[in-house]
Image (cartoon, rainbow, N blue to C red; front, side, top):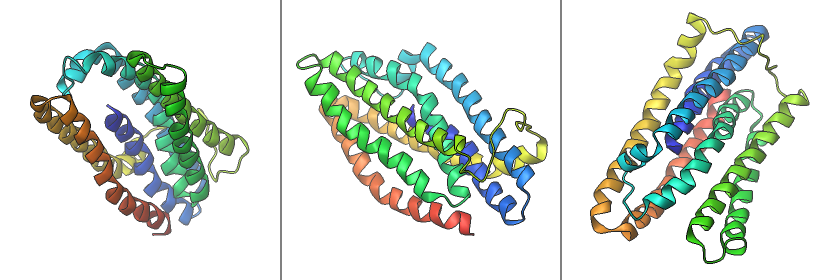
Length: 246
């Protein structure tokens, strides 16, 4: 579910980033503002629809993704909180790409790093300190810690926008999706979304296959997936740095 939500943010954010960099390069600031606003508000709108859909059909979705009967109560507890907070994640991922397109990599790094470090610090605090010995409450605490971390990253981006440090101005008046604009955004964004969806599908299939061998194997595969993603993320980092320059 997280991969799908991130994919939506990437579809509009990464799709718009390429277009925005080219618009800034040719000095077309007005169109750039329209594209940035359209990408941001479109991602939030579609993200909200997906979040609502996921909340309504949460248990069938988790079953499809490979949650076993023993894992299901904890998955439901975590997911209900996490999915609602995903609206911040959609905003963060979209803004991450938009801000990177104008070359403000330090702002993006600060927002992501602050959220990640805060999550690492809050997780043990909520799990071990506030909910000692209560598994369900500990899971809820972990979800709340993640939500708070995402909210903090959102506040970093909002501060960046409100202080007018961005090369773009975001407003509902500038929200003006048209055929040419959406084609420019989606021709880059859709392949990115498909990549994220296939990644989510592969994880779901692995979890379903691992479920026959017990919950500990599913947990082990989760750890392995995160370790192997480190190499991929290094490559993504170089690509994100190269894109606005190109």
